Amino acid sequence: MDIHAYVVDHVDAPFRWEELTVDEPVPLELAGPLACGITTGAGAVLNTANPGPGESVVVYGVGAVGLGAIMTARNSAAATIIAVDLHDSRLELAQRYGATHVINSGKEDSLERIREITGGAADYAIECTGVIAVLEEAIEAVLTLEGAPPAAPRDATRPRPGSRSRAAARPSRP
Image 1 (cartoon, one colour):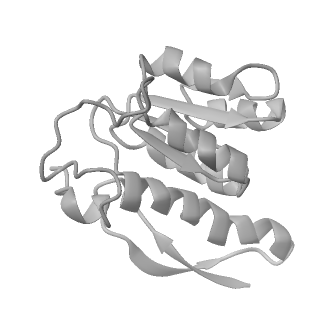
Image 2 (image 1 turned 180 degrees about the vertical axis):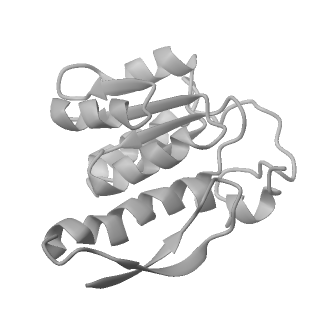
């Protein structure tokens, strides 16, 4: 079976369209996450967040999309990569594939732990669950304790929250 996918050789390389061949014994339901979920998570990190040196990324939900985000964040300039999920088995995979910290939100207050790990607020939160309450927490995770945007200086490479495209404003890294 042939799968068409975007492929990236390394973080600074542009995407290119390529045909990948998957061995016949591989069930389509297993190949699907590779073609869809993993690349969706990778795109969220590369095209939307695009974390710079020393920045932090929180990924809520580490299924196929979340693991794609974790692996890509690991290959970015991000220093802190936090995985949040309810399942320890998924968190073990997240840690294996690049998370620097894991939080089981069913066992501890994830927002409190994120603030502890980041020293206040995360730079980016990627929500991969589709659960409204989790989305609301992801928004809180990138706000300071007082509920205001982080006090980091903003310029052409880091526009104000709510701007249409962070990726378009951020120049490519050398």
